[in-house]
Image (cartoon, rainbow, N blue to C red; front, top):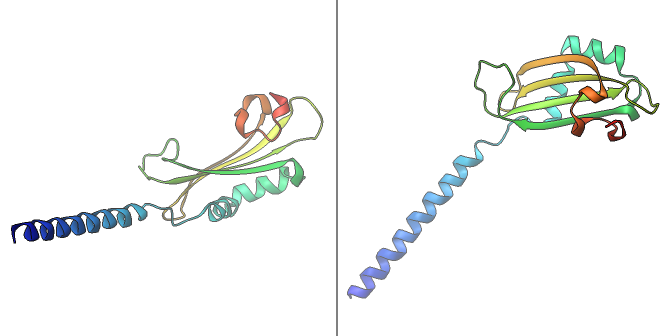
Length: 140
């Protein structure tokens, strides 16, 4: 009878450990972003200044690249928002070889609320911008 009780206790303990493990996995899933990257890009593009800059400078889709990445927080943010989409939309100013001007839209969107946290527009030389995000790696 003693062995039966030990086996029963072992089975109950294993079930409890399994239940705790499952509940921890469910809690961790709660950290998934509720806003996807498509909606993050859409939020940035809906900003008035961004849409004006875009319509003035972005002309040729083949010269354009859009990237999104989930980062810890927006730069210079006093709010310690966790899970922020970084949206970068870039386009070369011409298709000619060499280092050219790159038009850049950079925005940060809360992955949980969809709020636009920060946005900027600028034009820089391709050599001054991050190599991995350049629309043409031949310039580096």
